[in-house]
Image (cartoon, rainbow, N blue to C red; front, side, top):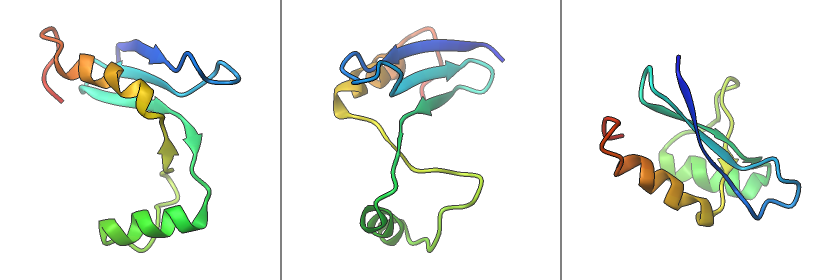
Length: 83
């Protein structure tokens, strides 16, 4: 596994997250973000995806839009396969 740091939210109040990494071994993106705990938001997300639960081994995380250009850079990076 070769993890590549992609970027961290410079406006995070504690400076620790959200953060993105790219795993070169399987072309996946790892995300550290704020855990979504609002039951209303989770219910809406599940309803729109046709699911009734979040699996115990998964979590819904929230990442601010200002960090999305980092993902766009990865998608447009000619040195990696398209996501």
